[in-house]
Every structure is written in structure tokens, then in C-alpha cells.
Image (cartoon, rainbow, N blue to C red; front, top):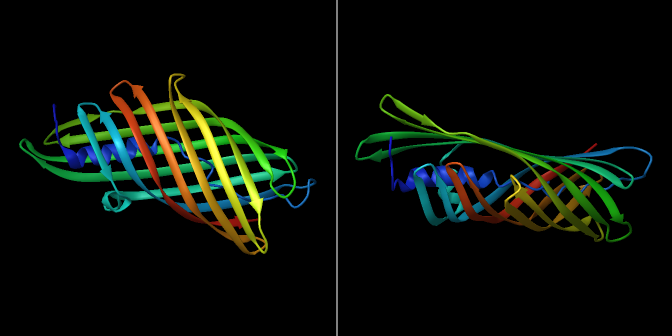
Length: 248
């Protein structure tokens, strides 16, 4: 099946392909109270990101700008969240994204049913290089990415899946304000299959209205360049995020 120039379909596939460009640890901002026990924080969040660039999946290609509202009605189901565990100078970071998108597109050959599933799981270790009023963490880990688009036209179905396990390194800094406010900055760089790259930048803040509850918000940008079998991505994903931190 050869289907070209289907802009809505390409937008759905593009949104999924770009989301596989590997989320950061969602600005997890929990701080250990002492070095003798583990502290934990779970942070569900929403990233209202738009997309800019070029994405090709199979014989579908698109170069355009899409806002978050353009993509919102194509999402069937999505879950995003981050988790951090810390003891003393050491920490463990996890971030997960699961999203399913679909669309029905009218073409000259009939209506094409498009379904895309993507999953991104990031696991890393953090070491506190600087303590004090403005602590700094050095971060390294692995990110697993899975993408599966499926096209259906009449009785014909075409599916394509891609997964990759890639390393990344990063740095995260905090600046503590009183009362309850905390500023955060995050930067990481990773590779795709040892060739192309992804990098992302995050700046934000959090406010803790009680010791075990906080709200987090800010801006996040993710640049992705990847070339693989039937999937090519050169995109920037950026927008505001908001979430809550639940410490225990």
C-alpha cells in the first residue's frame, strides 16, 4: 500500500515519533531530609508541547508546525509520570510515557484508519556533585523507546515497529527560595543507536505548600534527530509543563 501526502495521518505519526524522543525525569525535585534513609517522590505531569520540524515514517512525510491543541483531539489514551528515590548524595530517577493516538483520514483510495502506540521509559542514576543552597546533580542512564504505527485500508493492514535502548548523560541544578519555592534547571544529551542524537532543556519552579506536596511548572524543549529503517525524525518539541509532587 503506497499512501502519500496525507497530512493528518502524518501529523498523528509525527506526534508519536517525536514523543519517542525521550522524556527527561520531569524535573523531579525531591530533596532528601537526611543521609540515613531513602526519600521518595512520585510526580504525575502534563506536558502541553507543540511540534516543529520534519518526520518521515515509511512513505509518509510531513514538514509543518503543530500546536498542542492541534494534537489533543487525536490522543485516545496517555499516561506520563516520574519517580525519584534519594538517599544522601545518591538518587534513582525513572520517567515513563505511554500514549495511543488514532485518526480516520479520507483519501482517494478510501478511508485510512491510523493507530499509533508509543512508549518511552527512562532510568538513570544521580550523584550530588554540589551540596548547599544550590545543589547540582550529575545524571547518567538508559532510555528505552518503542513506536508502532499501523495503517488499515479496506482489508489491507500495514504495521511498523521500532525500539531502541540508548544511553544519555545530564546535569540538574536547584536553587532554593523561601518559603517553599525551588527553581530547577535540567540539560541532557543522548544518542540513538550510537549515531544521531537528542538533547533537551528544562527550566522551571516548584512550590511546596506542605512538606510532602508540591506543584511543579515550567518550560521544556526537546530536540531530536534520528535516521533509521523507515523512520526519520528531525524535530523540536517544546511547551509548558505542569505537575504535582507527592513525597513519602
